[in-house]
Image (cartoon, rainbow, N blue to C red; front, side, top):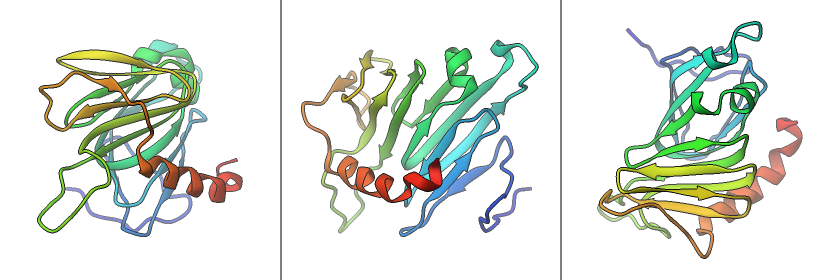
Length: 184
């Protein structure tokens, strides 16, 4: 049985664990393969599979994550550099894969009663460095540095590149400036 635990510096995360952040909270995760994840506020990320053996075969190393809601920034480590097929992020509407990447996946649910979003509900990905792809059963699109991709919550539509960044990415960039020293 799983039990909720309050976060603290140095807390170990295990395969199968889910990290949840509150309205004014964030989490910086340092992974054993050298990757770093910055989980944004109001987010929920599950570690479906995380296996890293520095002395093992690269194809055996895997990082398979599920983003149930919210957003995070991922700067991939050894797994992302040596076993790209072994690194993916699933959301309810799409799968995101990488090609050695600093990227920012996000998944936003449709607004509830009385709520309002400044963007459409669905899966997003922004690439800062490297490349990613975002796919669903209707298609796949490659995402390069400075590009933003989107899959609508209504999965009947293929992924597409956006002409303009959603406003939430500007808010994330401002936050990242504040925490850059901690990430380093």
